[in-house]
Length: 610
Image 1 (spheres, rainbow, N blue to C red):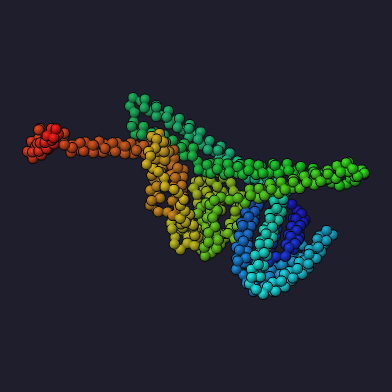
Image 2 (cartoon, rainbow, N blue to C red):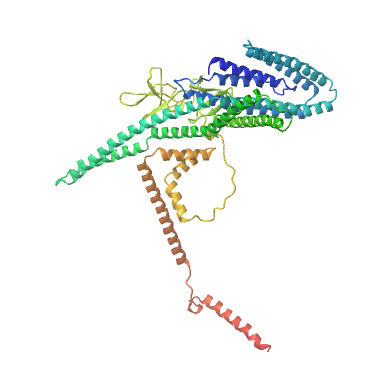
């Protein structure tokens, strides 16, 4: 997009926005002028260029601006709603008059700003638009003076309340329409940039695919070498074992070398850098797929709309020569059908264009804003505090000395077998996990050497360090839950499945949660489960599973033995059942005889009365 086209788009937006704000007279309830921020977003969107050496930056810059626009949209509308609710319920005549004066000042500044943005005019059309807006502004200010006079005549609080109830509801609707206009204009603007967005996404995916292919080839080559070494070591072990007199030390050394080679093979099967690139490739492949799901129907709608506009132009160039009647009515109806179809297609294009904005602006659930004495910040994937300004348009990191540095979040990065890296002006590789992390370079021995200096916080906790790290567990996050009935037992197969899946990692993770007593235990537990899963090799995981299974069997055996012992002890304590006449206790015998005599006496009474 050349400079002239950028200027034309921005001028068109500025004059349309100014006309929109001059259509109706209403009082502004917030202190700031929202139109200046909307023009800023449009200017930034117009300045984005698709440069040949950094296609990937186009998508990143577009995403940052659109995400900031949506954040500001929500922020401003929330403030307007709060202000409207306040003044609709509690306002006096002096406050109302002050709001009127402030609104007049805002419109004066808007007109001055519009002149700076639109002048000098470059064509007769621009001159006509400027003169039209100047005339609208004069009429608007005249109407606003009438509104001020109306406010001055409100001599009773009841009249002020009635005016506020009627007027501020109307003001809220008009302010919302300004943002809807900007939203629609940006959506239509994005529909003309589908090619640039697709090129940027495809370039990112292609670069990462090339990195992944390179890493896979290197890993495959290394794996093949290790497999050949393992084969030779097994042959050597077999040859030594078959000797008549074999050396146990030599056999032990061969076993140790075989075990070492197997560990290296396991490590390459779960190469961390390769897994990271695979995740990145999958993420960008999904992003490109999601974009195409929006772009393909949008392209069809735009093509149909362009063809329809050609038909409308052809229709407008023709003149109906038929006499009034059915043919003339058919000609008129044809024009109406074309107009209705054109308007319908435009509405659909706007709807899909808004979906395209959502594609850029949507963010994950972990994108939470926090407040500190230094300002608003978010927490990145490294638990670092990233301070944001101007609704995410600018991101800053804090150094150990407390100095702010702007984050280079659109810098091109690559992957190799050693991890993520960036290139400097000389093409040298600098390894860095993220934009805010420490930087390393490889020595001749392929050992990482740290080139960035800090206060020592990367090796140990330093209380004097100014680079604050936000622990997500500082905020207590517990889900709402209902009491669950846990009296019923689980199926044995379910218990075995759960134990085989989590028995080797869950106890350690739960132990860490209980040790730190974090306020966000679910978050903490999830991180620990992933840590124990990915930080161990397959051999270590299999060993942990075997230990967990043995532990479960020991618990079962201990419980079984304990239950058997308790049952035996209980039985030994019980008195064996026997007849009273067999008892040697004279007291028990006397009680038994007395009881039997009582029973005989009661039985004999039946015969006494008969």
